[in-house]
Image (cartoon, helix red, strand yellow):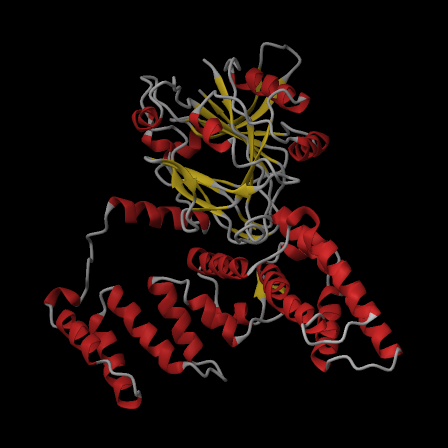
Length: 521
């Protein structure tokens, strides 16, 4: 058998266009903000020292940012809190730009202090071409919404800035309203109802209308009709057309308990996925035969600490399979690769080779394989960024040999190591690692394709909460444990895809995660 590598480096913090999907990039932004804070402090001190005026909003902003950043003891731990990460993205994408525009406005008289600020700003922002944008704010909100939907996070605690009893700066009412726009179904109903009871909400009419539409979408049209009818009495907005549509749906008998008992297989699997992510794993009789042991290899003195998580199909977690030093070597190698994607081992390598040429850590938005080829993943399917490591790297060769010993698979061919960086709410919905070869062949008829027999995944860090790998059809949940690795087969002995190998990555709740994959073909 031949190996194809596919390694994944999972960092946790925030989600977004270029920055928010990447924990690494968000860390860079956080460090850059520290530099900007020094520049802004110097500008304010110099200007006031020259008996000139500084806008009160700028002085107030400077004080607030100083106070916020005084809470940072460990940058990774601080960014690991989803709400800290969201505040950082919103502040750098919006508030800092307002400050910069205020100091360097077109009608302002230039001073030595303002010119120095502008020069420093330009240098800091353009370095590595990493900074936040308005799109990062949107996808950060999507990440928070995903955590709420997956883990049923409580409204009051989140508004106070608390997750897992760890506090951050509170969310504003506007933040909560923006989060609501990215929620769906029952979680959205629960969130809006709590929001409507919050003091100081000024957009109640729009929220009530949104609540009514959500009730209608989930089949509770009678409740939606009651809300719209009451809302029409106090609103200047005409709702006659919508009330008519909702009333027609409300009059249908099946609307009493819509779709009860008629869940599709896809919906059943989504429920199983959510329960596993929440830790609701049902004990089975098969679990009693699982075991941990030292797995022998062809080298007498080298064994692997294997924990069998599922017997058929085999899913195992190997403990202490990669050292801290090797983890650092992986990260260093990922930073050094550039313009190296020339392999034509598989279509994934061919298609991805053009995406990773101009980044320091070479992290770009993650992709998924579709019938039309590779495309940027939609945020509800997969959120994260990817990079690659050349198989000729010493660390790649070393780890390939180790996996060969532990699995018995031959490493004749290998994909480049893939590194995926997950941000706030970073996840990957249910999917198969095995490829749909017929559709892949249709993309390039002159190419020979091999399927992925098995997957090997290193965990490069442990996490405080979330980030597990789950197999909904097998009732298996695998926690990310630093220095361990997970191994499973994607194909049946016949060469056909094993549908039981469908797996998913749970959204990260708190912390920083790194992982590393190999796929065997």
